[in-house]
Length: 426
Image (cartoon, rainbow, N blue to C red; front, top):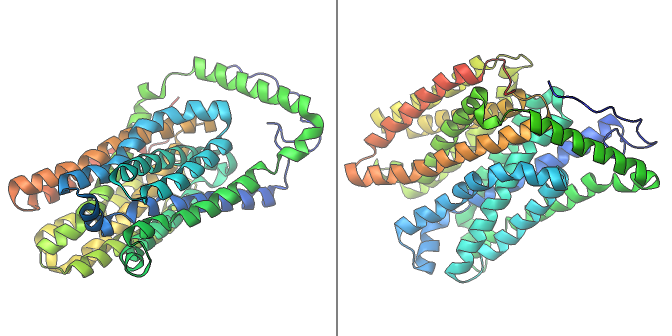
């Protein structure tokens, strides 16, 4: 057990960590609003690309293989950047790093839409890097500020993220058709909610500074003590990468992310090969993500406040297994299978993100586990769409891909039985 330093009394008007003391209800509401606005900015930057990908390729002279790499690039950025975020946030503070990430996301969305293939690639890397930072830190902030409601807050956050992702998919082509600049403007327009999120985050999360100024010295001492305590805890705690629980949570995250991004990338192609029109297939992609919204809100009720999350992990995975089997054997019922896959995907994401907070004891540990889980998870997710495309070309059908998705669903069910148990990483 780590040794904790004694903490001096907090200066008047400040919390024990040196930040300004707000009434609990007002602070909680303001913090929740900021988190949800951040959530609204993360997925549209990715899901708005798929529906206009053909136009992107035509205008930039990119073949299908290169376009596949372009689509995978944000996931690779997630995997590379995620383990590095915790160290940066310890030095600069989680709120400040999230604000910098939102600024980077805003810049990336604008740069990606500039004429020229070079700007397209550079902007995509910036977008992926910025989203990776928020992906890691938001669960840690939820753990810190909403410790008694981790599952509920995560479900709401995920529902907002899924809803905005679905909206971006559905509006991408219509916006490209009516806005000057075509697909470039259609992608850039999602910088607007990012700007709103950054402004609100800056206002709500920085308004503590003035109240702390009269006792700057005391606040500085408290921050120094907090940093020293965190450093000592990190030094004596085993690496999260050596924890079996951390690997179980990470693999669960990877399974759900792999099937989600595989379907986001290839669902329209799968359906058109079965005779579904391209327009209908595009709206089925919208439906896939929209179905995840209801699941994201409902799953916290299933998870409840109990420590054992195995039932939730298993129950939310089974619809995916049914959906994949149905896509393979009865493609004429495409809408039913899409809804089931969407429900499973949206719910599994909530379970995965909740487990990051529920399987750790402190916000610092949550940030470490979040970085690991998203590194492992998005490495798996990056491989999925590329491997699916190669299998489709080699076999001439989607049957091997369906079989692999079913195997992933089975693996996710087994992993849920371990990750869902009441245990901690350390």
